[in-house]
Image 1 (cartoon, rainbow, N blue to C red):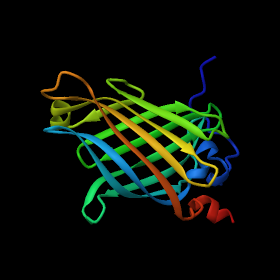
Image 2 (image 1 turned 90 degrees about the horizontal axis):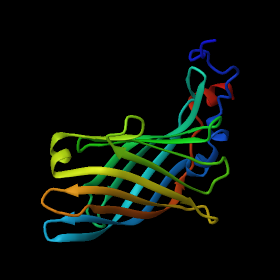
Image 3 (image 1 turned 45 degrees about the vertical axis):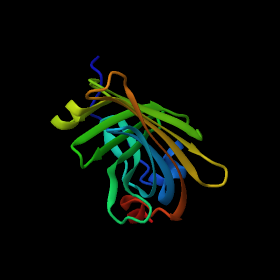
Amino acid sequence: MARDIYTEPDPIDPHTLRNLGPLAPLAGVWEGRGVDTHPVAEGTEDSEYVERIELLPIDPQPNGPQLLYGLRYHQRVTEPGDPATFHEQVGFWLWEPATKALVQTLAIPRAQVALAGGRAERDARKFTVHAERGATSFGICSGPFLEEAFTTAEYSITITVHEDGTWSYEQDTLLRVAGRPEPFHHTDRSTLRRVGDAIPNPSALAED
């Protein structure tokens, strides 16, 4: 018998906030400070940064029998005392309750996108997603300049939810920098504190 790849789950709970599993503590608006370690012409530089991340619930996403719940996010990073955007990123964090699969999609306005994946239990307080250049499921795609000058070979981010309600991340982007013989670990680490609650997703608001 052929596998059914078309029939959607029925019923579907519209309340995303109660179906996010390990992503639930991240829903809301957050601000934090972090440290970015990146390559420069002279070698390596550490830069402090401040950031604001909005993680807002979206409606449930069925793909035939697959059902994903998630958060749409926008991250804006600046250097202390400088209003100019240092880094900006948009995407989705997704969780599939049936398989415990985690997915992060990300896009940055330097002509680069990535899709990272992992797994986590519903009540996990620490989890990791990972992507690799050339992979067809969880991969990385860059524009011509980044692909040639700062080739992104791997990307991973580990998120830890803390007992005091904050959460932190450690991010590692493995680069092959033109003119350097060894790969470079471009890292970011930050701790975030809640400054705003999440608004329920549209279909949940409509039902209430």
